[in-house]
Amino acid sequence: MTDSVNQLLSPVSDDDGAPFWRYAAEGELRVQACAAESCGELRFPPRPCCPYCHSFASEWRRMSGRGRVWSYVVPHPPLLPGYAEQAPYNAIVVELAEAPHIRLVGNLVASPDAPLNSVDPSRLRIGAPVKVAFTRLPDGTHVPRWLLERP
Image (cartoon, rainbow, N blue to C red; front, side):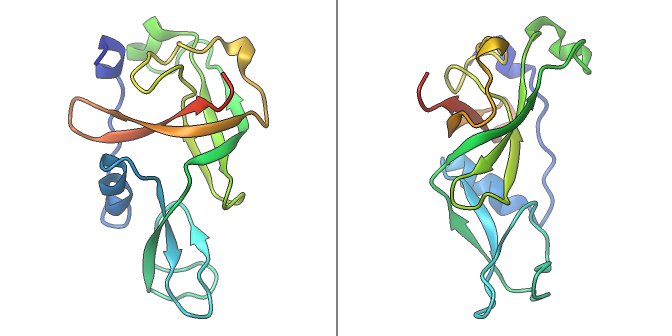
């Protein structure tokens, strides 16, 4: 792992989101879904109750890990001092291919363990096809990051 990966903030998990991080550690992108027979809607962020039918039944569905860049930003200056040496870096919002209403935030990088600034900001495009990759942080958490499908 690079030093830049060691400086990333680790996510804080709760009971509802814990399965997301367990699946990420296995290299799988999964999204919570309502398990009520008449519903089945996907939802993110994870929560105990379905916002569509109000059922408490849920399951985790595997996604393809593909999507498109829905939005992005290049922070100037970096909001956190620990990220300053990696500037300019990006933060992107990815719309999942199977569920366009599900959007995940992450970074577009050249490879799973590349520094946050490994993609030139001029290459960022709304609608660019991306695929998920997982990076292991020093605390053992695996976080999703995004790679261009056609670099």
